[in-house]
Length: 90
Image (cartoon, rainbow, N blue to C red; front, top):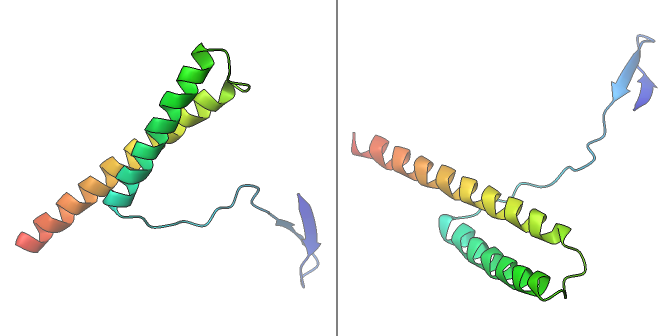
């Protein structure tokens, strides 16, 4: 962590985000498309792992976690859509 000196003379910490990513807003349909693509990739990776062709088996763990993240995002988007439609009806 780097420090900089402020006008008052005190050192203030400068925090740099290591994994800062831009947030992309996607529709539920886009999330479902991404999920289908990841599921297909995971299926292919599992097949090649069984055949001994997969060089890096850590890919399977990363894919499973990404699939779980997408399931969570889809569930949150569906919940938000239901809540917003309920508010509109009232």
